[in-house]
Length: 487
Ligand code: TAP
Image (cartoon, rainbow, N blue to C red):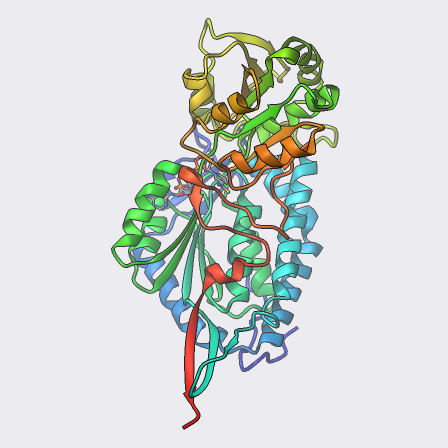
């Protein structure tokens, strides 16, 4: 494990997080000025899990300086050795998959089945991009008077800012291609959900990544994240989060013409045509919006149903929603867990006030924890707040449409454009509507959005740039053109 790799001596394992210990406090995540720590709670039980350091600007600057020094070495590690180190990192994540999944269940309230998938996703994304350093080749372009070559140059230090809804998967989508392209990474997990990222940072060191190559920096967005934006040595920001914060990040990056990738909010449509397999579309619809308790940027939170099958569809949807298993996320059979925090529960609840047009609801546990039952609102005017704003909770609005043109008009009547689905047996219609809906990804007869082999990202105010897929390395490198005269 401690072999010298490409002139870089990998570090032995040094834990960077002290043992998790329970502490007393009142909120899910409370800043403590005196000790500069943040209290982290279990959203399913309300119980405290641990305190995590909340870094100040001087500590962030020191970490960025370490990342800058590490870059000078990491960028010169040979492609084969960089690939080998990333494969070791993937193997360490794989070996600790159950532990990482358990952290995500406890800290983010993810159901155990999803959390295992997410840990596996971090491993898979690392393995996928471990193949990249040996394949990210430039071009030789025919020109008169000599030879012209292009090279993919790493950018330097990349700052990755991660939200709380998919803490470890979204972290991996950023750091795996960034490291493969030869950059070093500073990563800020969300204050509410830092635990899996901190453990992955330990695993990176344990598997031999040199010190400073990947650093997890917990703390506030307004301190740690903001410093990534303003620090001149950070050459790119990879931000996932709300459109509101994304706008400020983009404006801040403009000051230094800093590269930026933004993965932001969504209000995606699930379009059900009358010629679809209506039973299947209704059976699957709850999982297109209630997965991760609706805290999913790709949630299909607008269900557009052709009027001729509207009543039939709602009749089939009701038992499907009632059948969603909501409860203890540690149980294998559970399909939906709690919301992330009491504050977020209040926000989601505000979309279902007394008198809201609740067609039907699923179940949710009583007692402690941030529980909100799956909720179907119908009929809903397309201009209602619940139909236009991102709720980020288990609430779906159902809206009828007349024909293909009407469906596309409604689907596009939003500033967002991240994801979506359409259900039809007509392949021509599937292609026409898939092309007409303004969105970064779309699934036909499925709710799948994220596959690490394919590009993912939004259009309109859902973001800029694409993650994952074969081209992700291009987002973490610049093309240098070199002309060699033959005269
Ligand atoms: P945000 O409040 O935007 O926070 C996201 C991250 O940005 C957190 O780490 C946060 O830190 C940090 N941050 C906050 N203010 C900042 C600032 N001024 N400068 C730099 N960083 C700052 O979003 P959220 O509530 O965590 O996540 C929910 C949103 O993310 C939803 O809108 C959802 O659609 C979107 N989302 C999008 C995607 C994709 S792929 N498009 C995926 C997941 C989530 P703190 O932890 O300190 O707040």
